[in-house]
Amino acid sequence: MWRATVLTLFPEMFPGPLGVSLAGRALAGGLWGLEARDIRDSATDRHRSVDDTPAGGGPGMVLRADVLAAAIDAATPTPDQPRLVMSPRGRPLTQARVADLARGPGPLIVCGRFEGIDQRVIDARALEEVSIGDYVLSGGEIAAMALIDACVRLLPGVMGKLDSSTEESFSAGLLEYPQYTRPQLFEGRAIPEILTSGDHGKVAAWRQAEAEALTQALRPDLWAATTAKKAPAKGESR
Ligand code: ADE
Image 1 (cartoon, rainbow, N blue to C red):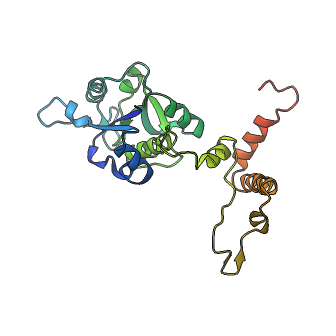
Image 2 (image 1 turned 30 degrees about the horizontal axis):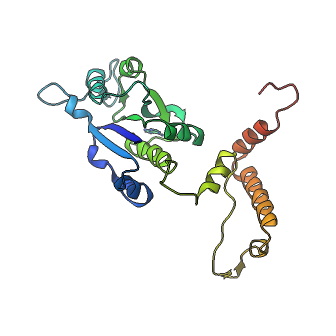
């Protein structure tokens, strides 16, 4: 079973939103597993302290290398298990990486807090830093939940066939085309006629064109990457 192990100072945050809706039903149904472990359980002094002031000075507190390393070791990650640490400094998470993580045994995820984590534990335990975007959260927990949610919906049996088109669209490097449902007329706005024409070929072509137009307008960066992948310039090696 695919299983996420989360190391956090706030285990009570889990499962949180992962316990409801699609992910929550799948969790209750045994389609995936979640273990939230308290980093503080690996503290050794009588105050159970996990952090200390940064070497070299500066504001805030830093998560201690010895405590976090002990917490990681106590979680007994297997050699094939990805060891991640959520951090705005990490490589930005992509759908391709999510799909890759969903195919594996499920990651061990360290959630940072305070001003950061002692670099030596990142190096010594070969933690891969992963970001969910160029903004700063107050801790890694919400980022870990986002990553887990994105993986869980791809697990076999979690979503059925239904949403596979969204998947294909994004994996193909395009944003999803617009969707409509009843009523036929909403505040004077009608559903595009082609969608009610019953011509599946025309519907598919319209959706493809809309997806391309949306991607060009809203995500020129994604569009450039997608077109570069599809039609490499002459002499480009790929
Ligand atoms: N922790 C704080 N900010 C983060 C971000 N943007 N991505 C991942 N982890 C984080």
